[in-house]
Structures are given as C-alpha cells and as structure tokens.
Image 1 (cartoon, one colour):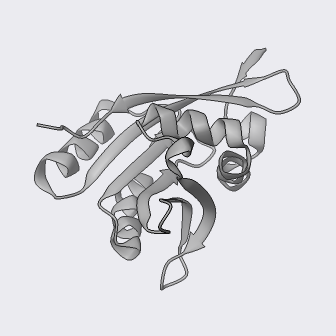
Image 2 (cartoon, rainbow, N blue to C red; image 1 turned 90 degrees about the vertical axis):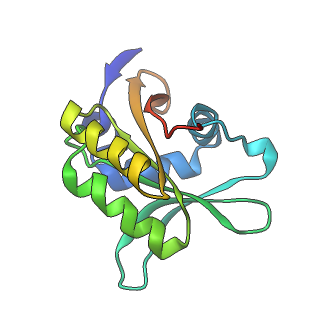
Length: 153
C-alpha cells in the first residue's frame, strides 16, 4: 500500500466524505476513533443541507434518528484552515447538536488552539481527527487518529 492524501485518493472533499458514509468499514473506523460504534446503531449520512442551503459534510444519527454528531472535513488541501474550523460551529447549531468532529490531514498549532478554545469556552465539544490514507487495494483505506479531544473533566 502507498500513502496518499484526500486530493490524490478522492479528487476532493465531496467524494471523500461520500466514501466515508458509503463504505461501512471506513465509517466504522471513524466512529471507533471517536469512541462511538455502528453496533450501537449509529448511521452516517452525507451532504445534508442547512436551512440556508450550506452543505454539512456528514451527520451521525442514533437509532432514534436524533443527530448526535456533525462532521466537517477539510477540503483537498489537507491542512485544517480557519474557515472549516469555524463553520462547523454553525452546522452544529443548525443541526441542534453540541458534538462535532473536524477531519483533516493535519493542523497547525494556531488552529488547534482555536479548537481547544471552543472546547474550553463554549458548550460545544469538538474533536480534531487526522486522516491517514493508503492506496493499493480496490478502494482507498482510511485510518483516523484523534489529535485533540474535548475535556471530560
């Protein structure tokens, strides 16, 4: 297997997030990385729209159909930017959810500081997850590594 990235493996953010939602093993790995489980009845839906027609990358629902998590992915540039790091808060508000995940290949310390600030100063709980992508099989293989989690204290 050869290490890859979002741009090379998927061409962009939209096909990447659709792949996460459609590929059961990939969505299981993502949920496991953030301490959720498909076995508990969670489902992952791609591309829902806000009331003003903005595109939410992924929405996770429990068995009752309630939104439990909003997921925003960085675009094919890979490194988390301030636009993606901040717009997830609007998506969480729109979906009525206080838990969110930002997926990126990496993030600089300033952006990580912003995510930590949100976790420390608002009721929102954001987890920053790095994706590592490998190509070589029928489909790309994605591993998810938490970089920053909200405090449980």
